Image (cartoon, rainbow, N blue to C red; front, side, top):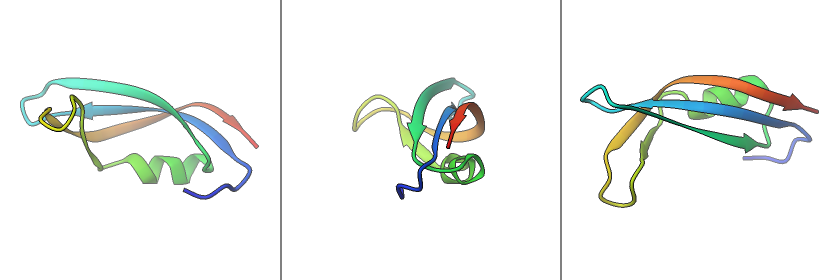
Length: 66
């Protein structure tokens, strides 16, 4: 990620192959659209190295500051 003077707080929504869902909120140093593109479609392992893999299916902007 670059330091572009933007701080966007996003909520990332995840779903595993069984339909279980999870989410997390994180501030990133990106404009809103770049933050959405960065997370959307990516896979995350939610419970350490052996946890379930979950894919981002939705990203919401919680806060945006320039």
